[in-house]
Amino acid sequence: MGLTAYDLTGRTAFVTGAAGGIGRATAVLLAEAGATVHCADLDEKGLDRTRALITGVGGTALTHTLDVTDRAQLRAAVLGVERLDIMAAIAGIMHTSPVLETRDEDLDRVLAVNFKGVLYACQESARAMIAAGTGGSIITMASGAMDAANAGLLCYSVAKAAVVQLTKTLATELGPHSIRVNAVAPGWVRTPMTDRHDAGLQQQAEAALVRMSPLRRVGEPEDIAHTVLHLACDASSFMTGQILRPNGGVVMPW
Image (cartoon, rainbow, N blue to C red):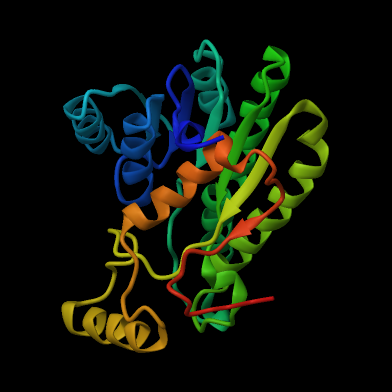
């Protein structure tokens, strides 16, 4: 197959959460690999910056300002893509609270974005791919938080665990249509979402994770983007229903 297996020339990708962090890094990398990239997010200014980065490397980008929790908005954007080959459902939010202090609205908001938003993206893209009859690759974004108990992260961890089950179930259902479905479960990555502590706490948290990692570092958005690229392209054509964990070795599950 060779290095051409990583060439996405002539293909079209749709990336949610593309206004920053892992979503932006993924959108730019897929464009560098040759794909036309549809970038979706609530943050219009962030999308403009992502589009500028893509065009700056000679790529092609289109933007969609939308809310992933609104199925109608997602459907309209996906239906506007002439041929969809890749869906990267990356949009997500963070919430922290002890279990006994978690409110209904906290859980509902996180599940709406981190699970329902991914579900909608998967459903709408899968329907488009089945209708086209050309197969495709769907990549969801889970998290290393699903592998361990983390105080304060109930809502987030539950939603990401649900994404994993969604991924595996979809993989079994969509395989006969030549549609692959896989998930990426990153460890700690420096993004605006993880930069939620004051500077001192942030440094302490990162230092602890660096000590836990055999690689002695935390992740960058580009580390995760390269994992998404692998799942998006023909190099992973025999891979579906899998959870890839780019986490620096902090967690090594069976």
